[in-house]
Amino acid sequence: MEIISKSSMGELVISNEVISSIAINAAKDVDGISSFYTGPVDVVSTIKQGSLKVMSPVRIIQDGDDFTISIYVNVAPGTKFQTVACQVQTTVKESVQNMTGKLVNKVNVIVAGIDFDKPATQEPCETEE
Image 1 (cartoon, helix red, strand yellow):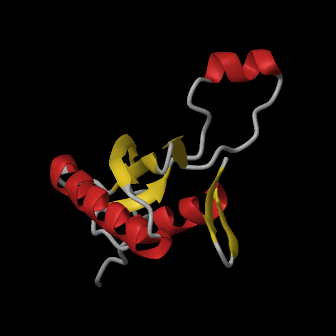
Image 2 (tube, rainbow, N blue to C red):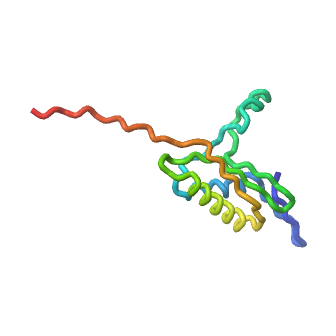
Image 3 (cartoon, rainbow, N blue to C red):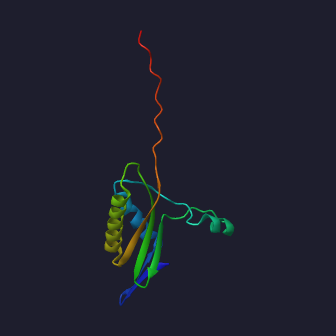
C-alpha cells in the first residue's frame, strides 16, 4: 500500500516504508521511548504461515486519502505511559502530516513492553589494611 497523489504535472507516490520511517524518527525524539517492538502481532497465525520475519513497529491503514498509524513501542522504566503515549501521538501525527501533506486520522500507540536496564556488575571492593 502506498499514498498516491495525482496532479496535472504528474504523480507522486509515497511508500509505506517512508511513512513508517517518518513515524519512527518522530517517536525516537520523545523522552521515555527506549526502543520499538518488532515482533509479529499474532504469533500463532505467523507460525502457521511458516514465516517469523521481523515486522515493522509501524502499521498503516489507509482509508481513502486519510490513514491511521499504529506504532509499537517499548518504554524506559519509571516513565508515565500516558504522558509518553500522548507525546508520541502528537509528534508522529504532526511529522507525518507535515512531510506527506496527508491527513492522519489517529495514531495508536501500543506499549509493548518496558526495557529494564541490566544491573551493572560491581567490582569487588579491596579491603584496606
